[in-house]
Length: 208
Image (cartoon, rainbow, N blue to C red; front, side, top):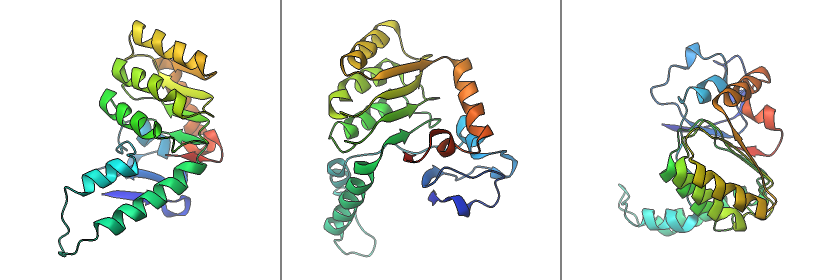
C-alpha cells in the first residue's frame, strides 16, 4: 500500500511527517514510532526511485487494465504532466533511509539525467547503500542538474576509486559533496527527530 501523507493526516504520530511524503506503510507498526524520522532511519518506510515519463510509458505498455479499456494514453499523459510539474519546481529531493542500492540509485540518476529537475539544488541520499555503481551513476547525471549545489550521502558503501571519481565530477560542477560517516548519519537523524521531521530539517521545497 503506497499512500500520500500530508501533515494533518497522521494523528497516530507525535510529530508531523514531511509534507507530501510518499511512503510504503504496509506491514509497519507505526504505533511505537516516536517520530517520522525514526521510521525512515530504521528503514521501515521505503519507496521506489522516481522514473521518467518515458520509462513509465514503456512499463505501462506491458500492463493491462482489468476493466478492458485502453486507458494507457490517458494514464501516461497524466503521469507526464504531474511528473513534469512537480519535478520542475523542486529545489530539494530527500531520498534518505529508503535502502536504495546501486540499481535504485542508477534509476534515480537516469531519471534526473532527463533534465526534469532543472531547479534542483540539494539531493539527500543518507542511509542508502549507494555502492560504487550508484556513486558513478550520480557522477554521470551531474551535467543534467545545473543548479545542484549540495549532495548529502553516506560513505560506508562507496570504495576509494568511486569516491575519487564522484568527488572529481562534483568539483567540476561546483557541487558540494558531503559524504558522511555512520556516526554523522546518526547525528543527522537525531536532528530530524528533534525538529519533528525531515521536511522541517531542510526547510520549504523538500520533496520525498
